[in-house]
Amino acid sequence: MDATVLPSRSNPLILRLRHGPDLDAGDRALLADMARVKRSLDPQQDIVRAGDVAAGVHLILEGFAFRYKIIDDGQRQIIGLLLPGDFCDLQSIVLGPSDHYIAALTPCIVADIPQEQVDSLVFRDSRLARALWWATLVDESILREWLASMGQRPADKRIAHLFCELLLRQQLVGAAGERDCPLPLTQPMLADILGITTIHVSRILRDLRLAGLIQLKDRRLYIPNVARLRSFCDFDPAYLHLVRMPDPDAVEEAARTGP
Amino acid sequence: MDATVLPSRSNPLILRLRHGPDLDAGDRALLADMARVKRSLDPQQDIVRAGDVAAGVHLILEGFAFRYKIIDDGQRQIIGLLLPGDFCDLQSIVLGPSDHYIAALTPCIVADIPQEQVDSLVFRDSRLARALWWATLVDESILREWLASMGQRPADKRIAHLFCELLLRQQLVGAAGERDCPLPLTQPMLADILGITTIHVSRILRDLRLAGLIQLKDRRLYIPNVARLRSFCDFDPAYLHLVRMPDPDAVEEAARTGP
DNA sequence: CGCAGAGTTGAACACCTTCAATGCCCGTGG
DNA sequence: CCACGGGCATTGAAGGTGTTCAACTCTGCG
Image 1 (cartoon, protein in one colour):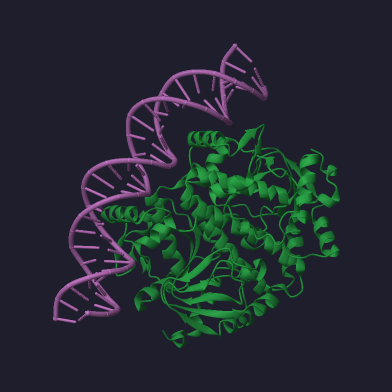
Image 2 (cartoon, rainbow over the protein chains, first blue to last red):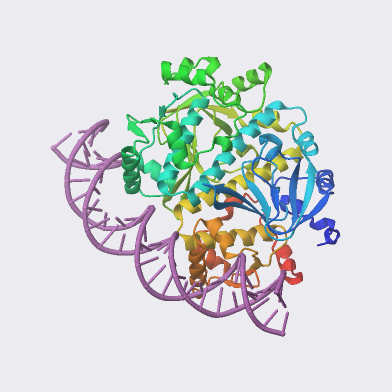
């Protein structure tokens, strides 16, 4: 694998961006310059590990790589394929520690781009731009978790996982108590979220109710024992990328005053 | 639904960002100012339609909303839930026309933020920042399509859809011909992408082969009739957000010279 | 009142999994 | 050199999760 065989005109990032926003020659030169430091990787070699704080951003120049998550300590769900011209972990400049793994699928050549270089290019001095990008990247991270859930979890754990997520996300904005939150979802809605039929949703909710894991009343979700529900569905909130966990006082206050 | 009941301290965007990057009082004031123009929405009312070019960015202040895709002209897959403090379509400032729908689930209050206001805040004058954000947002869009595929398509159409995507994405970077491309995925890999077992992957590939839809040889995918495979799995490349479709000349050249 | 949509339950069926067995290719080591 | 092991690929048979079809109740609403 000799990276020098790449003629500059076929830098895959620049090829790919021909289908995206307009760039001028100066922009392209800057991008080409970012991809200066190259590295070869063998198949199955990890590029990013979940929990890693990235030292740099990686760009695929040649070969295939893939993103994946590990569910329930074993089952792997591949949640993306990375082709030449794709960034592996542009998110890391905003999100911090990765919530998933990335590994080479074929022999790869990747560019290692220093974090600061991208950071200064993108944000200059705007904290606000970073905050807004953070918001979209958390969305994307939730989407990855949903995809992994859809691929690897049976329907009952999928719905339990969704409930854990909704409780926590509503706590973040003070809309939920410690063990309960609004749940304005009808069963046909839940079916379309989970990719199953309404009939099956009904049966699963009955089973979860009978197992004492949840209670539903008046479009509200009660979770008698949050820890138990979380362990039932292997819920790990890391994918929500919360710098600070929800403030228990705020949550309690919300519980007292109501939504 | 009276928006004025919201005390400023409980602006849900600001509450949510307490768990994200640090902001100072000035930043928070800017954000609060963005959410000045409010609007009430009834349940089931669309906020964004697929194909729409957004006039503004929408932020949920109260209520639930949801993202969804329509597969095969009918089946709905919900691909995200939007809670107070969540942006609906921050992507639109980069991606242009939406690839999915967003609708109110409960009565909602949303803020309408003019496109230019966010745009100037985020990008100032950096085309490059826009290009990099574009790249991550296309990733996110692919993820949405995968989730919808996982939820609503049977495994044979799911795999066909993946193949259509991989052909096109490789054409974009000149790594594929008109009807064939590298496919360095083993069946166990495909299984982990599709969320099924390797055994079932084997059977489906056999069926697709027997139907004359695909050929596999030497880790390469041949598609005798791309239009036929696309219609089989209802493939619509809109979710890749290509400003320009791949140049047929470039693809032909790649086909001649090989990868 | 009648109707539309939510929710529930039963029975038959289908898609996909699990278990089991076999053949293939290829790199490794006796 | 050939035997062995490991991962990939394929096929059959049995079983389970989730679907389809159908019937029924309940609620809210014009």
